[in-house]
Image (tube, rainbow, N blue to C red; front, side, top):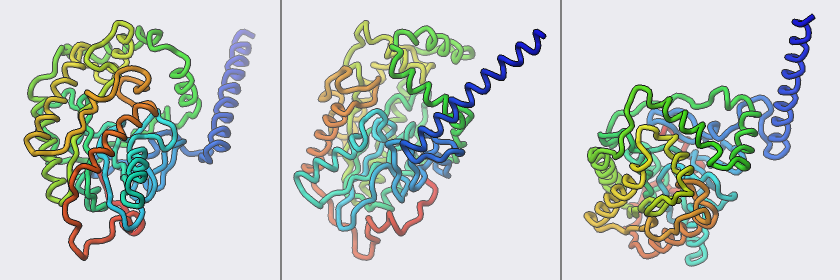
Length: 371
């Protein structure tokens, strides 16, 4: 009798979870046209490639839409000069409203000043290090870009002591796992982010960080070799861009915290550290300062345009949705700075005759492996 009682309640729980899972799938289908049976998360926008990861041409998840080249955003329009934005999730866009990520706003600002002149092609991939030159070179070949905006993510270099430029790369295994196959997980995660304050999750994050550091002692500061790796990768990017007759524009990295962490923001800093547990909290802003000095130095050495976003964008929740990702207001501030830099940066001579039209590449070139 006791076993029957337990089995009956297990059956009720399974039925309830199955009903919620079905409701989540129907909700995605009605709101977004999502497939009922296949995985439907942000990870479905990407696939493995010889350069690491690339976007899936035509893929869609919620507000995120990949074009025919596998880059976020609309198709490039023929007869316009292409601007490429290269970076990680801050450039790809996470929390902004649809079409309010900074590359789209840059394009809108440029359109206001010089109508029908520019496309902005957002080649960003979450988690990418700018030293993945093969991925960048393929994008430059596809788009024949005239300007390339480079927004490095210093934290992605934590744990790195050698440049990524010209290192052999291989496909990153698909990140689609069990959590991507159960829609209910995604719905609960979205709900938790909206209603649970960061301070409430701090004890859980602390445990996760300690668990990740079982076999290593966290360090208070990244070594100078890490900054040297970033410097060499930046130099490699500049060379690759200039070899293709395009103009590089470097951007310093802005964060929610600015120059210091206020006591009330310590929970948010811990949330950032959860992704990079090997570095103690005090090392993050130190890394930011040193990395931004490297970006400024590389721009000065090459005589490049520099957008000092770290100095220009105010700290706090008005401009940042979390530790590094923008709100609509933050993306608009970033876009204004970058659009001004593009308009001021002299364009190099056009691509020699015989080169394929950059916009037609979006429709006629089947994307090969990237990143």
